[in-house]
Image (cartoon, rainbow, N blue to C red; front, side):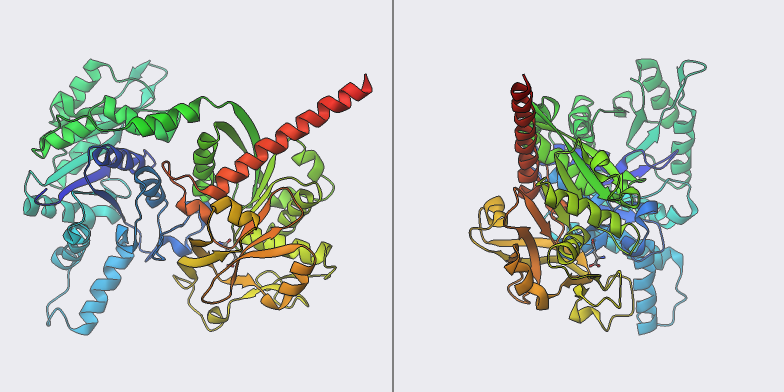
Length: 550
Ligand code: GLN
């Protein structure tokens, strides 16, 4: 294809309508037609990146392999498209201003008054085009965060208006996602909020080419007609996005609505060939027809907001489908777990995952959960802080190191089994300064971790400041907790496992950031598999006990 096509996705009426999923689904359909696609997100907040945002408020921070801390929508892009995103795929207002101000200080603007238009909007446009200019993509989909009409997203919308003129109608397309609410009392679907939202976009100079209507209900033809009339689009460009059972249904639903065809025909591209989505459908088939079922306990402290563990939840969906197993993730607030109630809480579980996290709150509950998993031979998976807690638990309860801890939790501990990484000691700024992104790791042949991956060389993404303290390594290995994955360049411990346990693995990295629909992460796949075997064994045991009783 001669030049890159740009698709802009905006939203209105309310946030959280699923622009990320619509973008990812459209991307998937275009990719399934043989196009190369990438998706980028422009966020209107002032933070340079979401790294310092509270997960309670903003959900998970997604880390790319080049070490950028980004919005969780990038996770959806990667999971749907099986692509790798980068720093360039997530741009915030903060970053734009930071770059413009840096240029201003450098004297790049040659004495000019630096203004929102054109300087900020030019900078935004440079970033809009950056990935397209690499020549690697047929399509760049740009999702603009927030809602049209928000004060803070105005420069982005203005920049999109300018981009539309610069690119011309066969290279630019605007998709607007709105809500068509159903009013129970009157039994009607209402188009007024959509009309207003499109009007708002028109006021900013952008006529949407396609209006996608999120709705609880099916949109009857008269509603589509009304939206078409008031929003100035042909009826076949009013697309229904009805609530789905799973986000993974959305590409198929968008195909039924022919969203991909509408996009291609607007951009004057052929849409004769059908997209190849058989593999995706096979995945859906496995996801929806499980033959097994397991309960996994997810122990964390951000359990009120499931988005805080988005990638973990999605990884379980991928791994569940791979095993044709329904994975019921049960949430446990680690602040509510104590030795006295743990067996009662965990009696129905077939696997326990201790989640990543920061700070002291909820640590003891995590340690209690791990001790239970270790002593009762229940499949255990610890991620990042989860590994660090497993190390702490082992130090205290097996090695007998009283008060052992991480210096993040207890800076004055006598046994700092987890300690600040050397390169972190001088760091004062919190933003973007953790050990971030993909690093190499070598797995020990014969270990469980090795059997999970099937090879020794792996590369996984990180986001942490603390590490296993190698001074204790001999003591740990002597007592049966083995460092089975090591960073070859630095010697940092990346994976630890218990030799005498059915499945007990902790990793310092975040495998959940690499799991995709077409490439489920092996650690999740094998963890679910271990949970299935554990369940079977548990049930067999129960049956034998019953037989013996008779
Ligand atoms: N707080 C721990 C550290 O910084 C763990 C981080 C995490 O779980 N992502 O090392």
